Image 1 (cartoon, rainbow over the protein chains, first blue to last red):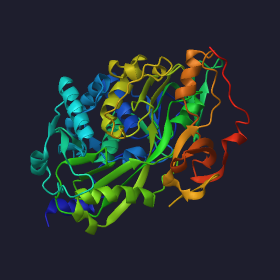
Image 2: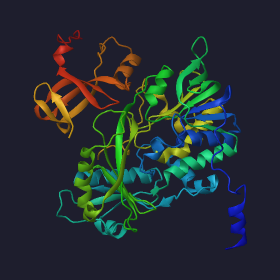
Image 3: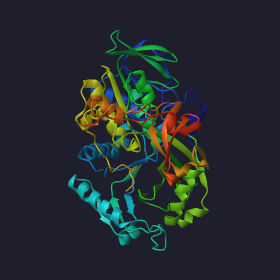
Image 4: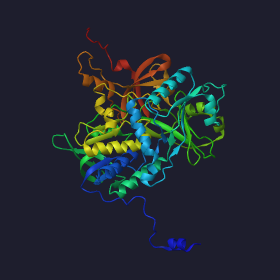
Length: 415
Length: 94
């Protein structure tokens, strides 16, 4: 045994440092309070400290860090959206994702796999061709490919014509990637804490404090006491409407569960990420070999993260046509996240009518991939009081102006 | 399989139904302000608790009202829309 290892083992104080500092006592006040310790809130905290020098920040979460929808998505990252606003936003996110491991000094297992959206009907082929052309126009690496090319990229997927919905073509997005979602939250949290940001898990916000005339936010009530704050950012996807309700805001959001599951781990079997909007399925193989699979959103609003047999029946009826070999593979875990569905499939971001209160909500099926750019743009918005140019069109006020951003490239939009 | 007790067809698989959104009283489209119309169209109560919603049994095109708990996923009560909308909604002619 090397002497160094022996000394390490017998050392009274291990040289390894804690990943997160021990939760400090809650102070009376902070410059910025962030409600929600998921990827978005933690990324905003880090960008506030790193980009703007705002370090008097507390991140509050009712549970544990990264335990909400950050841990419940299927970790797919892409930018082949359809609106100029959406593409500019998600493309910036891709730029930030690529060197995020180096910036946060943690391996987020960012893995560029290529992303295939399958077309099973002539109408879907036409839609894919349209998406590919719009994507190219917006400088996104995206093209329509045919079964010969699909077979080369995904040789283990069945391209049989003797199925209910044979694969006719696919929209191919080479930069499509997956990442380890927990590592993203932990990386932002640790990097933010090193800059002086305080992390307060198990600290539920139960109310908001405003100035006597109700025009300005002055703090939050929590289960651990009252905290004053100059500025408050809400980043609580799933319960956005409940928290925004404390601020007197009504949102264009319905809370709908999205279920997912993983198989037992197998050896590398599937390289690209496969999505079919028509069949409501998506699948990718994670770094540890598990197939991460998801399907259609639940058919009605709910705040319960229960799992249903209906979901698995709907998912595997189609999944087994594409991957018959999976019929022998057990499901290991299943879960649900609560998505914030907006009428136009775009987020709700920026300042609110309550001065000093900022919102980052409306994350339906597109929240994880936006984590870095949300952190950057919301930190900018909180630090300057003005919406970042990339999120101006996502303001809550767009609905009253009838100026929506219809994002038909969202995964939840059937083709 | 989750059952929806349809007032017309009795208990049926919930997959036979579509949820039509919260029951709100529609403002008169001729006199309402743009802002109030936008909130009627877009904004949701989205309660964590009991919600009153429109539901439709697709096979029979039958619309009715259901009250359910969005936290526990329990359907509390379903009834014909006539129970809430006792008389026809008339909007003045143009």
